[in-house]
Length: 110
Image 1 (cartoon, rainbow, N blue to C red):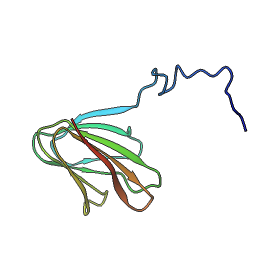
Image 2 (image 1 turned 45 degrees about the vertical axis):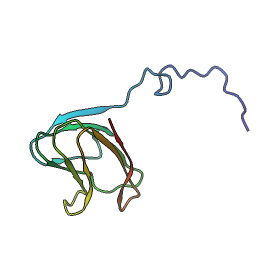
Image 3 (image 1 turned 180 degrees about the vertical axis):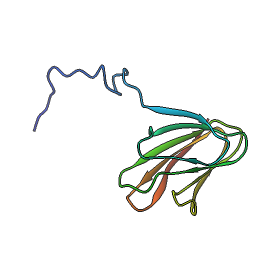
């Protein structure tokens, strides 16, 4: 088993600080449908309560949504039938999927 890593350079990694998570900042006025190709960090604002549809279920998929608006965001599955979470203003949540179901991993407030 390897005990040390010689000549490693983490300066261009997320840990080292030069790389940043891809993110999306969006203000919505209607239902927003997320796709698997979108960044996994979303800053979504809404003046009134709107709906955010998660991408179709895929194993290992994860998305973090930060509600930057004044209204509650209702986060639902891609079929728009199951509410996963009502995300309040100035709150963020991480959503993970096991391939068949979306789960809320954690919720935090500003």
